[in-house]
View 1 (cartoon, rainbow, N blue to C red):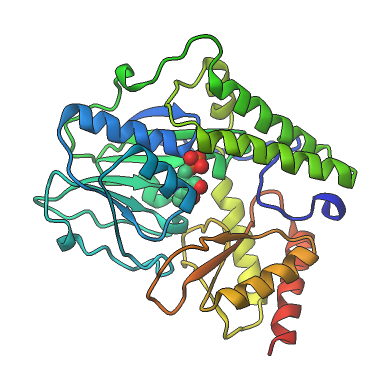
View 2 (view 1 turned 90 degrees about the vertical axis):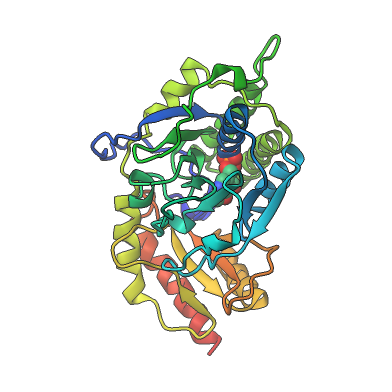
Length: 354
Ligand SMILES: Cc1ncc(COP(=O)(O)O)c(C=O)c1O
C-alpha cells in the first residue's frame, strides 16, 4: 500500500502480481458477462419482458442513486419498496407485491443476506449480489435471476454478470442474443474500458501527487461514460478473458480475515453501529450512522488521514434509527500494518468525540 500518495481508497487498481487463492469453481447455472452491473440488470428485465408481459418493477428504496436514475431513464414503471439495509436478518414484506406479473429486484445488502423467496404465487424476483459476489447468498440464490457488478470486487475496469441460479423456478432461458444492442464501427464500451484501465495503471504506478489527480480524473471520465451509455453491448472475447482471470478469486476470505482482526480493536461509539455477521464476509468495514453530520465528521477525519471511505447512499428516506453507511475497504490490498493504521485513526476520532 503506497499510503503517502494514494492512501487507502476504494477504487481497486490491481493485484501487483500477487497470486490470490481461488474458490472451487461454483455452479451458477447459465451465466452471461456484461460491461457493468446495470447492463446485466437491464438485459435481464428485457429478456423477461420478451418472454412475458411484466407489470411494476419494484426496486429497494435504499439503493445506489446513480443506478436508480439510470433505471428510471430506461423503464417507466418503477416503484420502490422498503427493507432495512443495516440488519442482515431483516425480511422483505412479500405481501405488498400483489401481482405475479410484477418484478421485484432484491439486494443482497453488503453480502450478508440470504433472501427468503416465498413459496407459491409470487412476483418475478431478480437478486443483486454486487456487494456479495461469491457470498453464500449469491452461490445458493433461489431467485429467478441474479446479477452482480463485478467491478465492485474484482481488479477489473468494467464488468458485470447475470445468471439464472440452479434453483430458479423460471422457465425463461437466460440467453437471447436479440436483446443485445448492435453498433456500427467501434464498440463504445472500448473507450470506457480503455479509459478506466488507464486510470488503474496510473494508480498502480503512482508516485507523485500530480499522477493521483490524473488517475482520479481519468477514472471519473470513464465512470461518466458508463452513466451516460444505456445500450447493452456484448462483452468482447478479449475483455471477457480479462474479467475471467479474477472471476473465481477468493476476495471474501481476505475481507473476513481483515474485519475479524479489526472489530475487537475498535472502541465503542454511540454514533454508529457496525453492520456485520458472525460467519459471512461483509463488503468492507460497514459503519451505519444515525446522523449524516456525524458520518461526515468521521469521513472528513479519515480523508485527512488518507483513508477514503464510501458513503452509501446520501439520498434516502429511511425511517430506521440508522440511516447512512460508511464503507471502509478491507480487501486483499490491506495488511496488518494498514489495518492498525485504520483502527488507530478511527479510535482517535471516537476518543476525541466522547
Ligand atoms: C448495489 C449495486 N448494485 C448495482 C450497481 C450497478 O453496478 P454498475 O455500476 O457496475 O453498473 C451498483 C452501482 O453502483 C450498486 O451499488
